[in-house]
Figure 1 (spheres, chains in turn red, green):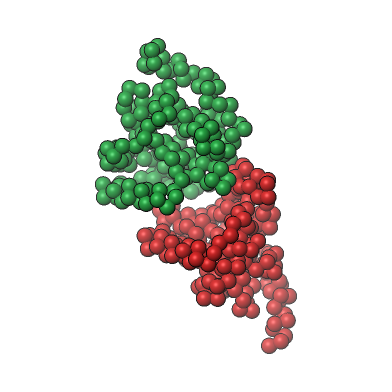
Figure 2: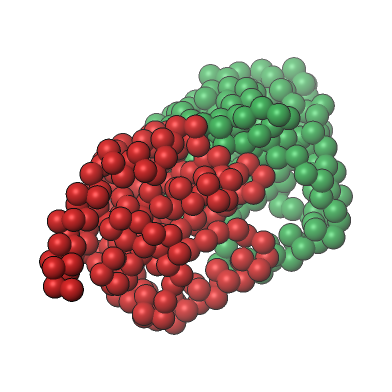
Length: 203
Length: 201
């Protein structure tokens, strides 16, 4: 379990497995996939989990966490979708399934945790991820956290009749100032005080 | 079969899988056909790959691959679409020239023109993408000549003989493609073929 300021990253619970069906079919999956608008059944989700487990057995490395707010609510998932052991390269993926929690810093806090975990525990030397050119929130987040825009695949995805680009972002270990520095710089602690003040005063 | 000027693209044979794939995977060509990977492979692993490919096709795997055969009859490598995303009509290209004697002779360019033409005019794709490592100057020249644009430089993604090397990604949109015939002219492939195989070719 990885402890953050606004969220913790915990093993997937039964609860979040249940919620995945909602998350996979609401707008969050559009943003998380970079512009896909597809719908999945519970059976398809189960099959996806089974396939992933099978791939892991065959040696595909990766790790997935549930994102849980400090108030104990599962709001999404984040992880290393794919870890290339030879080149120590980790591809990240994340989804905040509950729209109420978008733009609140939860995703940023979770991102800092997973990046720190990749660098400090898994000895990864580069993390990268992709998003679409529609996703201004993630683009801003990437800049704030220090990722570099490394690629723009032109017109790679169609959304609502318009072609959008795919963007690739990368962050090398030597560019990472450390989680603590970023928590400070991005004011996450202050945000936590505001967000969880009610809960704390109620305790 | 797709017929070019220096090469033809033909279906795979069992012999290719069992012999050529083993040879290519274990010679230096592997370095250039991949992002600088260097790992030996056994015949047993190849048998497993063949099995997995067959299973993949049953499950709807969308790739299309050809053997690359020079006009002199020699099988020199393979080329194809490793993966097609039919939702966004985007294809990901891969190519491999396993016979060193055929490097730099225009064979790869001719094969690439054939596959691009096939992807746009028969498969109705609208975008093609491919990647290579920064060390592979020949591949970069090749794809740039054919109109691909450099879209990304993913820094230090692969360790090659002690050196961290960038991955380059290229893309080509259908509207940017002048057509195979125009590029055959522009790149002088007909003259090259005439020189190599005689005017009758």
